[in-house]
Length: 192
Image 1 (cartoon, rainbow, N blue to C red):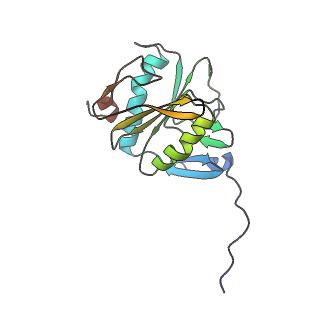
Image 2: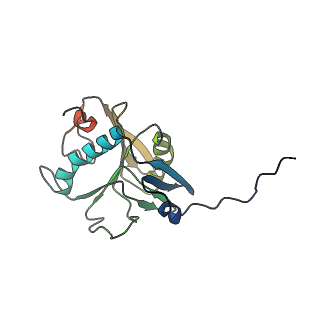
């Protein structure tokens, strides 16, 4: 005789579940579910690091750019019941003038970038993009280092508009960081 499946509902994940994860595992809470994945693969990490290096000088420190932003790699951010970890996120300093001592951050970023990988792309596109829209993140970039594409999304009311798609060896001005040109070959690590 087969045993009946438990009808006891699973409890929604909470921040303690993230804190209990082993080192090297990234945890997020999406729609009440604990979603985990390992640290990024080298190509993923390189593209994320390179993009951050390109925008930090002009937008954080005002070196050949306007300054006025806080830019963080893999911050934990609370979006109501969700805890997300974008690959990079940025806040205008008037909205987040001082970083808190401990996370997760409670202020919605003005921009988030997800570096797509085969294991995260579905959640990044379907679930996380929806949450970013619900919580009014102004811009989201989806960067795919394998296919070598950059998609720029702008929030318009409650809908994401695809503002631009770039790829390969394009040189781009991508909002909200369109005060500078970004050579995508540098993001992919091809201009060594």
